[in-house]
Length: 421
Ligand SMILES: [Zn+2]
Image 1 (cartoon, protein in one colour):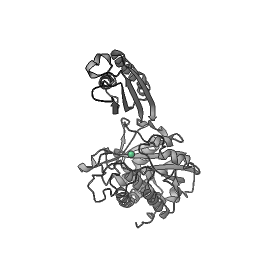
Image 2: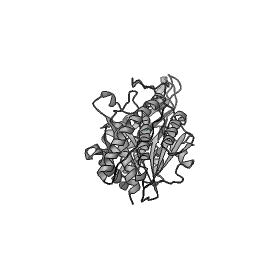
Image 3: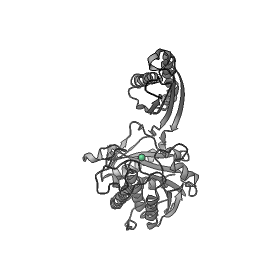
Image 4: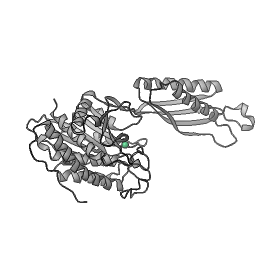
């Protein structure tokens, strides 16, 4: 596909107002290119660790801007380094991260750029993340002399669910030296969400994604023929009581203001229709945004499981992987910095406090083990009902105003971070 060049910026930019208005107008221009790229990526989605065309698109676009590129980092990841040439270089590096993988779902967005790859679709918005970060690369490449350090672009593969035995793309990239020189001292990454209006971002210090805990419960009864049910212990009946008791626990024992999801996604047990089941296995994910409450959950869950099993004479095995995916915790200093930077380009009304963590999980926590950073939310909804579908819905789409705001907020954040002491 044709490549367009760096956004050329000129004129004095000595004051904050000048820089903000320069970034805003550069972001509008870069957004047009980002929307073009987004449609290309959306039409050609790729699953985890298969992001060859998406990675190549990122690499080619970065190279067209004079940005150093390393391909195949952590299998299909791409790293770009933009060297700033500011007079008072701080020697710092800031990382900006976007995920590239799509979901194994059918696309029903109904747009001309709908997925051409049956059963694979960008319904989590990663196409928007990638294209907007390429938009940021356009803006910042035109502002090199205002960058007091380096910007490292991390295009990450395989963010979505890692199958057992495999690692995530962020781990693969880190293992493959993505954080080697220049080593970033902070990282910013975000996620699009229709919960906030397009043109805005939402921020919060502390947990922004709650992460999740994985639960495997096996209920063990005693097999017998259904004609002599009293000689057995029906593990299916016991499991049903446990599920019901847990719903009451969620609605009656957890604080009403607490966001929580106690969910069994699979249940399997029994051998044939006329025998009482001896074993039932349930697999679930539990999410609670309050970390103290989360610590208490395994013991509280076991109290219910044990109580129900004891009542029916059954036994159980409980495997509770606390923080199977940890919460994503944004650090105060970097949140404050991003809030101020985003306010410069979006206005205070469009920088929204995020009141509660989302009950979602993301591999961004792997990067945050190595440095402080922010996981921000990007608003995507406008009056068009097509922009109101939640992510992972087959008709998920974003409003066009999302692009310039996303690009401007992240561009200004990178500049201000590199200036900061
Ligand atoms: Zn996602």
